[in-house]
Image (spheres, rainbow, N blue to C red):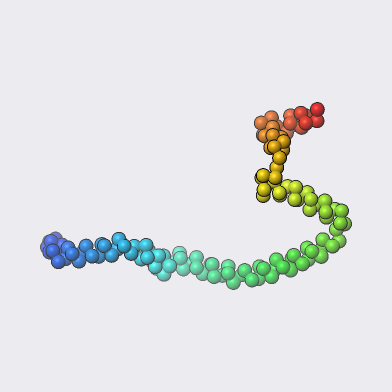
Length: 127
């Protein structure tokens, strides 16, 4: 019953009110501090992130080396084939990146393929 007597005291009620007011104002900061320093999961994630960040320069160097090798291989590909491949890739990528470049007829054709199927749409276009 000592706890009931302690809480019943006006001075202690004021102290409890101050504690709860503090917690209600600063709970986000206290939670962040706990998550950063207080549990093993965050510590593990921070270690993993640090390891990955140390690997980034190595991965960039490897990508550069592979890019240089790929560029050397591109010199052996005949130019017409290279230009055709670049145009084909651009023709596929540009409508996805910039949908406003696709004209209305292309949109209608794509809608027909979705509604009727590819074979029926092809038959209509070949008429």
